[in-house]
Every structure is written in C-alpha cells, then in structure tokens.
Length: 92
Length: 468
Image (cartoon, rainbow over all chains, first blue to last red; front, top):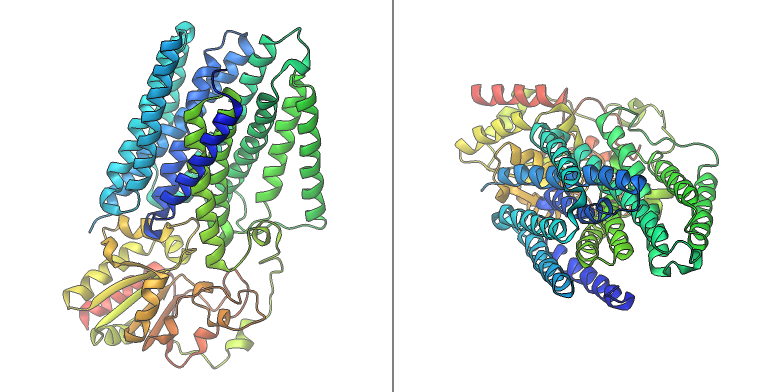
C-alpha cells in the first residue's frame, strides 16, 4: 500500500470536520434533498465495488462484487436523479 | 504503474473537492440544483477513473452490472411519487449499506487469497478491523433500512413494536456481534465466520428499528443515512481508497448532524429514541372526559368568514396533511387568500412528517415559494401578529403541555400557535398524537376544531372561502 494507515486516518478525520462545517449551514427546508443527495454520495461504495469485481481471485468474489455493483449503482443513479427532481421543485 | 497511481488519486482529489462544493451548494435553494450536479459529476469522475485504472478483464460484466443498477435506480427515481419520498430515501440507504457488506466480503476474499499460506496473522490489522466494521455497519444499515422502508410503505405496522425483555435481547445480540467480530479479526481466513457476523449484525439492525414508531422515523432515517456513509468510509479503509473515505465521512457527518437536529427538536437523546419507551403504552383513556364540553367545533363557512377578514394566516402542517394528501387543497386555499392580499406563511417544525424536511418537499411540490416556508425559530415570534393559524395534521408539535415540566414531551420546542388570534385545528377526531397525551390547545378559548378528513376539510374551506 502506498498510503499508510495514519495518512488515511488523517484524511478521514479532516473530511469529517469539513462535513460538519459544510452541512451545519444547510437550512431545514433542504434537509430532505440533503439526505437523498448525501445518500447518493454514500453510493461511492460503487468505486469499491468496481475494485472488488475487477479482482481475479475466483468466482465468489466476482459475484459478490457484481452484486455490490448493482446495489451501489442503483443507490447512486437513483439518489442523484431523485434529488434533482426534488430540487427542481423548490422555486421562489 | 507509479504514474497511473498518482493520476488516479489526483482525479479522486478533484472528485472530493466537487463533492464538498456540491454539498455547499445545498446551503441555498438557488444553488442546490447545481450542487447536486457537482456531486453527480464527481461520482462520474471517480467511477470512470477507477474503471480505467482497473485491469479491464471483466469490463463487459462491470458495464452490464452498472447499466442494470442505473436502470433500476432511474426507474425508482423517476416514477416515485413525492409523497413516497421517505420510504425511497430509506430504501436507497439500504442499498448503500448492502453494497458495503458485499464489497467488504469480496475484499476479504481477495486479501486472504493474496496472503494464503502466510497464515491468518499475515493479514494487515487495518484491513481486518475495517472489514469487520464495514460488515457490521453495512448490515445494520441494510436491514434497518429495509424495516424503515416497510414501515413507511405501510407493509408492516408503523406502531412501535415492543416486547418483554426487548432491551436484554438487543444487548445480547449487540454483545454477540462484538464477539463474532473479534473472532473474524483473529481468523479472517474463515469466510463462514464473516457471513455469521454479517447475519448477526443484520439481526441487530432489525431489532433496533422494529420497536421504533412512525413519529420517530425522522431520527431513524437520518441515523441510517449517517451509517450508510460510515459503512462506505469503513470500506475505504479496507481498500485504502481515499475517495471512499472522504465521501463516506462527509455523508457520515451529514447524517449525524441531522440526527442531532431531530433529537434536539424532540428534546430527546438518541439513546432515548433507540431504547426509550415513547408511545409504548397505547393509553385508551377516554378523550371524551378530558375534552368534554371544553372544545369548540366549527364548520367551513365559519372559518371562511374569519379568513376573509384576516391579514396574516399561517399554516402549520404535520404528517396528517401528507396522509390525507391535503397539500394541493392547501395550495388552492393559499392562492385564494393571497389573491385577496392576505399574507400566508407556513410554520414547519423540524420533526414534522416522517423524515427531515418532509413538509418542505410536499409544499415545494405544490409550487409554494420556499420564501414562505419558515422554520420554527423564524415563525414563532410572528404568531402574536397572526390573525389565523391553521393547524393541519399536526398535534404534538403544537402541544402547549411541552412548556410544563413532568410530561412525556416536556421541554420539546413547539410552535407557539396559541399566541395567534384564532387557531383552527383540522383533525379527524380528538385522538392524541404520537406521544399519546391530550393536547390542551384544543380547549383554549381561541381554538376552533374543524373535524374531518384533512383534504375534504380544506377542499370545503376553499369552496366556502370563494363563496364568502
């Protein structure tokens, strides 16, 4: 591994702080889009699923990877689309 | 190889920045659509770069799987009714959690395969611990979300399901989860142990959400949202993948903040929501005795007359409005009153509905300007200058007994609707809200009860108002 454990732990800690700073400013009227939008972002597991299903360590890992891939893509595409649909409704 | 690696992480950095800018966009309705697009572009960058970086042995399978998932997601997102948004968000949370468990499993198989022969001790502790965390959080998120979905969709009862020894069962299963987790860390090569762990954690998610009632759903949905992010972050630790860690922790933080806001709006601790007994005893004390002779019933014509001479009207919607699908009628009444120069605003309690921001989405769907949707702190000082407040489908969030000590909702911040000149409460009956306690507001001198189905009552009001 090129990245040491402490290094990625640092990234994790800093990202949590950034998250807190940014999200605290989201107004209550946008809390639902925030949830569905951030939920789509958590579908980033998709990247993990690609890595996992690209593995050559046998059929089981590949099957698990592809199933994860379907789940995560559903989450990502569905999440961003529905958030878009919702946000379009917020008009002045 | 070294060059490729740098290129990938550079792209991940760009994606991370776009994710953060995207979330920043959500701080205002004006910039929110663009923010969401930033997020989608960031995801696209991360996915494409990862695909390119992989040795493309399984490319057709990968593309096929993604196309399938994209199609399912698109169908869900485009066909779902806005009123079904809480359960959809719940369901998507579950997909994310489920994916994390599966990725962790695949990664474990891969990692164990690489070090096979070196013995179990050969597996990096970072990988084994984060695999275990990813499995636990992911499985809890998955089953918990499925239960939340089933409750919100009405497939199972929304009532809190409580049983004798509930807390002990939860503690036992929680303890068992930790014990099996330790076993997996000690012997990661035994895949069956991993599945046992995922199964038990799944059971734990089930046990945690089943006892929670409908009105506490905003907290559960926010918490599961946070978990889905943390599961992704844990998967990031398994794969030493920075974009997973960054995005996962952003979502984790977001969900935790929402959870805190929801808890504060109910004046309850998270532990109390997860383990507490609110709504535990369905009291069948006759509400007739409490309210007998003290409430004033009204009709659409009378309310229409009062509205005609009003200058400022505030709607306070609750979950009942969503159930009755009365929001469209509310919009019509709003438009009719605004045509007469009446100022109309909406006072929205943070926990109104079944998920954070639920009421806002329903009203935005009706093309009601977001300028009129006021949060609790904004609307409360204005009630004393309000001629008529119309409470529709809300109960506990306008219950003045929250101001007194010793009750189940004591200390919960409420909307001070009783300060307005007239309060019209649209409600089917005098039955209590989720907290199961009577609402003294209904007996106040300035309160009028308009009994009936929310949609029909407001439809009648629109009719009566136009004729008045």
